[in-house]
Amino acid sequence: MRILLVAGAYNSLTQRVHAELRDRRHAVAVEVTPHGSAVRAAVQRHRPDLVVAPLLKAVVPRDVWTACTCLIVHPGPVGDRGPSSLDWAIDEDVDAWGVTVLQAAEEMDAGDVWATVGFPVPRVAKSDLYRNEVSDAAIEAVLLAVDRFASGNYVPRPQSGLRQTVAARTRPYFGQAMRRISWHDDSTETVLRKLRGADSQPGVRDELLGGEWFLHGGHAEDALRGRPGELLATRAGAVCRATADGAVWIPEVRARRGPGLPRACKLPATLALADRLPSLPEIPAPLYPAEGHGTWSDIHYREEGPVGVLSFSFPGGAMSTGHCRRLLDAYRAACSRPTAVLVLGGSRDFLSNGIHLNVIEAAADPAAESWANINAMNDLVEAVLTTTDRLVVSAIGGNAAAGGVMLALAADEVWCRSGSVLNPHYRRMGLYGSEYWTYTLPRRVGAPMAKRLTEEARPVTAAGAQSMGLVDRVVNCGPQDFTAEVTRLAARLAALPTAQLRVVTKKAESERRASTKPLAAYRAEELAHMLRTFTAPEAPYHALRRAFVRKQDAPADFGSEGAVAARPADC
Image 1 (tube, rainbow, N blue to C red):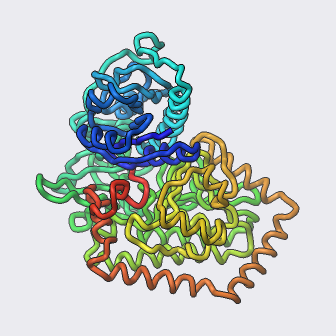
Image 2: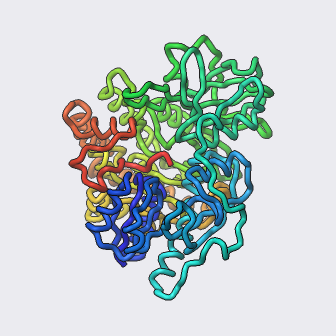
Image 3: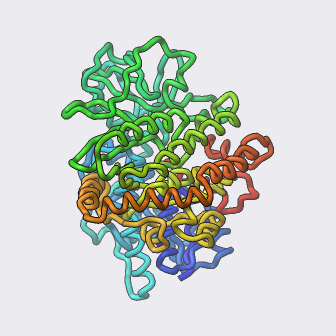
């Protein structure tokens, strides 16, 4: 069928719906349409058989949904209505929720139901939940609804005739007044729930060190204590703040700016607060988590027999110069251990999205920081590529893009959860790319496919990535089960009689390739392109980066689909 996707942003769910429908050989057009009039124009332009809206804040005009079937993806069960469905679910600490595909109607979220799918609600950040459990349920519901529509004989059911897990009601927008933290009164559990509900967007507005900030993300700390609201320590760019009965780590903050001013960058807390931050102890992040100790670290390592697992989780998947250097140190430490297989990744949610555009944008010299960041990424990728004494597996539990995909490709095997979306390209950020992609990508998929992936710049599903050779294994499991499943599979890999032979063979192959063209040559060629871009003020990269960070429209010459960023949005 000819299907038109209309969305307020080309976010992770829109990308996954786009890629999954394309995998099923539908002709899919995408329009980022923030206004109802734009929806009308898009439908008139494409004349689709069906309209699907994975993320739509605008009201679909009546003349559109009466003339063409329009399916709205609502992140709530049957009966739930309103713009803040997930916020309310997290605030009420529900154990289960749902996604419903509705037909557009006069009343928002009140249309007839084409499909509904439930999902569990673990205590994770809203953006993580959205990219994983919500995304899995949404895809199942959308594909079912599309198949039902294509059959021509399915009649959607009125909500009144369906069993409802929640009372039919429209709940209001979940505004900042509902998110407000009372540091003197709120328990750690309450603070974390509020932070989880706004980790990516919009953040929790708060007063700190004489200014107003949006707090992004939160993790429990069970040892440090202080006066409620007091800053206690720093760690890996985060600040630790006391609650009424404990403390939480806050990784990122964003300054609140007045009307008419450009949006501030969301930054590691210590960087954003640098000129206000009092002298605080820097507590190193534990690489080896202690059993039963409830603290936070963005990088950790563990072993199970012959398998080492080096996991990391950086907000939004962005890796700054500092992130890359700390992860490289941890990788070298992991390589000093006597393991047969080293798993890189293995956590739910993002593996990596490459360089940290927010930190770069906020730097005094963005060109210099871009150069430092890409070189730090390259150092990390090179370390993986030159590991020849064991097998390395990249385990992608969520999404990955740009340099994050290339980091994964440096391993001997790439395993990917079935719900992941990959963006193996840099073009939509106006970059040639680095991280040895000219070496690893053609080696995996062939030169013609590498050219197509980087030039078309489209998202790829896990199944699609496996079919083209981009990944070796698709792990069919839920987000919560990925770590355990990957560890089990890695143990099986280590136990294979051929495992040691593979190590010997890969060392010989690495030496053979280096004799033809050393890795340093690939790096130098890629970085020559990158340096020209970084140091040219007129290069599109600078305007595209600014638009991505400031949540502005991308330059018009990148087209209607080009108004999307180079990699998945935070949600």
